[in-house]
Length: 174
Image 1: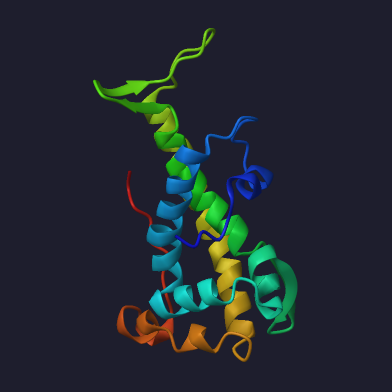
Image 2: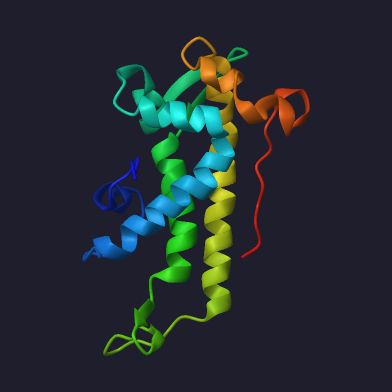
């Protein structure tokens, strides 16, 4: 898989602890990227983003930048930040679970107790809400720069699933 973020980069966006379990984190990054980011961007633009992840023209899209749209100045946080939000919404629900030959177990520290599942669901929902807020501004950035991102407007989903070429952000209940 061609992950857009590494576990170390995720650590710069989200508090995931000091010790990184790469074997657990990489599949969650992949899941957030292929499920959430792909459905947000649409197929054509998602694969365009993957193909251009090292393209300097796409760097502001990944890292964030200021831009002007209809004479209003905005700042978009970038796809890396959006993907970190998607990652975190999945991470909080999965990280304390270990799969053993005897079944799934919950990891407990010496001085800790597991967090309530409903609290974790609330945190996950908050991360998705944050992602939705970030996406609204990234969406404006993409619309403000059609010459930089031609596959954005020519996206497979732009005319088929949403009215008048607009995509909508969907929340999934966990």
